Amino acid sequence: MLTSLLPAVAMAAEYSDTAGHWAEESIARWSDAGVVQGSNGQFNPEGMMTRAEAAQVFANLLKLTGKADLSAYTDVAADAWYADAFAACVAQGIMNGVAADQMDPTGTVTREMFFVMFARALGIKEESSLNGSFADSSEISSWAKGYVYALVNNGYVNGTSAGDIAPKLNINRASVMALLDQTIAYYVVENGTVELKESGVVLVLADNVTLTGDADATVVVAAEGAKVSMKGYTGDATVSVVADDVALTNVPAGVAVLAVEGTDGVTVNGKTVTAGTDYTVPSQSSGGSSSGGGGGGSVTPTPEPDPDPQPGDDDEEEVTPAPDDPEEETPTPEDPEEQEPKPEDPEEQDPKPEDPEEQDPTDPDEDESEFGEAQGGNNGTDSSEEVI
Image 1 (spheres, rainbow, N blue to C red):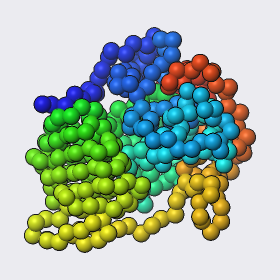
Image 2: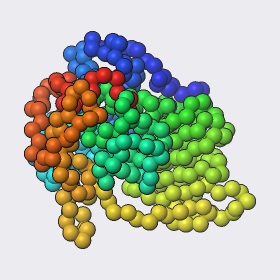
Image 3: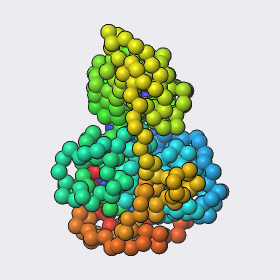
Image 4: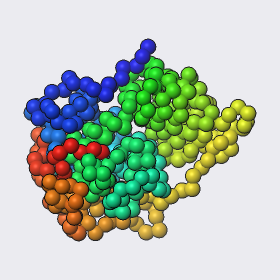
């Protein structure tokens, strides 16, 4: 049985403001998938993505159920439409607050912020160099470079229509849909066999899946307790496991498997892989067996500093999460949320050095939909076609 996949083009969702838009097909695909939704018949593709909306996107996309304690955040009411999404994203390690007591639900999200959240959500490892030349690559914040490099190097991020990365530019709703669409080739939500004919990310959210085919792929297993067989698969793959108790079987020799930090009970061809460990499946002739701790092709990476410390961590000194970037370890002098770039040319912006903690977000509508009400204005994002 072939699993039910969400096709690259799905047009069931209808919004009065997306017809003819450059991201129309992407918006339709992920609306039909239940990952996003509009409000009052509109999607507002050029509206700025807020932190609350971003949290809801990730919670829906990965079907997150975990809940972190958000009682320390004074701006997240327990009954707010986004409260569970934030709690799930914090528990998953995708997001943190902008300060020890602030989550800033209505704050906007820059491209580099969203890229870091997205990479973390898919278990994509940081990379140390950038394969390609972008005029503004030096503007990428130090805390975001490794993840942005990884997304660019894997072909998931190509830059804007002007050929820039535009890391400090606020990202809009249409661009988020485009990023999901061009990155996730297969969104596997039902049990069965999937023949991989197209390269890209294979996001597995079903319980029992067999992957076949020969397309190169980054397989992300996000369903707790999932059983994933790669019997018959002959392509070049890497696997990231972001959920507990995942069993991978028939994984070909040479395939690298990463069990991300915080996971437990991950096995590859019957061998346990420790969280935070890269395990490369050995050939039969190489012999040896291992847990994630070493041997048999398993490598334990050198621990790196947490780029996103939580208040109360037992570090040498107590660190407060950076002002409005859940990923930033050291605040930058700029405010990526209060930039005032020219709306007609988002690639030539000159952000003002402002205090990111003193942003003035739009007041939220308490009757917002799950994805959030349409936000008015452009706030520095190009309304013309934008290539992620």
